[in-house]
Length: 159
Length: 159
Length: 159
Length: 159
Image (cartoon, rainbow over all chains, first blue to last red; front, side, top):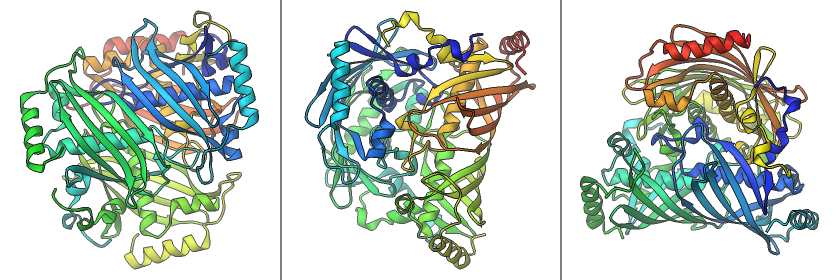
């Protein structure tokens, strides 16, 4: 607790890290994440997964803000989510993202949200696509983005 | 605009209404629902669908607050959602819920979120289950709740 | 409940209505609005107030989406909020907005969130300002917007 | 990025740290935090501040989940927030909390949300109170909680 900001690897925690062939993103359950049933409100796991995907993109050198400015945005095409166990305030959770695959304009991945003890909270299959911000039509993954993603995947053997 | 509160059928709008064999729930896209891409943030469609399910339960005479107090809560087991078209601030949307089916402890339904012009924004398959708030184990749908649901479904021929 | 969509004054409910010199906006507390303490999470009253302000602007003929496209956006400069009583799932609440005042680039108003029985939940003093979306510098309220607002206020004697 | 979880001081980042007489809590702006104006939606700064307060309480050894189970909850009585500058996706922000003062049943503090470069985004004065979860009446700060808070404040000279 007495550490100063400069001594802490903030970026690593904010962007997550790699373990084996997966990206790991840590988070803590906040008051705002819960609902009157006393557990994490189900839609908020979708937010947790989004934070992890954005962090993974940052690790790859892809900046969401830059994409928005270029008018080339990633939209989610479909999500399948299975809820396994509830989570409560103050719990530390991890989002494990793997199975990252690129198509012409699509990205697919698998995400599992769990706790340190191995208890799984939710598992998601996520399909996204690049679209033009103006009009919303699918576009091919921009070449510079694809290059960053494939380089990252080959270096880190991210499946 | 000059109408007084008592002249407006607030409850109908808040709880939605039935059309053919489906429950219809209206909503308007708010600032808070959008993200920096200028469209509704994908997780918020899950909220829209939740509001519609809660409204349908109220139509059935099932009160979420009462269930919480009894320690018999409905949790979501799985959601499959496909995103079709984006939505922007100020748009009026409708959540159409049908395919309502009861199991021993489970509820299943189909939800489609669309606009007045028929444009579909998202389609969901939702599976929920009754669990004990304490411990989280599945429980049979409480008999009084099941009775209200089946009565409602038979009167209104809700599939 | 058996009413069809066309029979219901959806727009009135979505946009709220005028009573005396105030704008009234109705809403229902949703599952997503609550937290693990079993009551509405405090930040969500800020959302309720925002929805009411957007609805009031729509009543005035001012479209948020249009403003965003023009690059002339309203930002909130300050909010003072006092929390009076808690709210639970399923409660019907009203946001009463009055004290609407225009400056060169600023808008001020008073908002009270309460229930039908007169119980007050939260009271807000809100100050907003028009800024350029690009750069964020304050700009004078656009003339067409000011004209709509002042016309509305004079017709309806909105203070 | 190749670090393993065990090498990172996750708890420090999740709970924040002390600098001089203030508690510092880091966060990163997420997609979900933004709105269609391309910047952080104003109500979400209230969430950022809540996360920092909860983290500070954890540093003090006060567990929100435990308080909820005991039926002794902290509610927010009032917030005054001034918005200074906008924030965009991917920005790293810090919540600095100081001016922590205890009354019979109340807690007061000052919170400033800013960036590494010193740019201030929002400043809040927050007043909270302990209440009984059942009934909502103010209660004296529980003695064990007060003891933890005062011990923490004296050791760390938190104002």
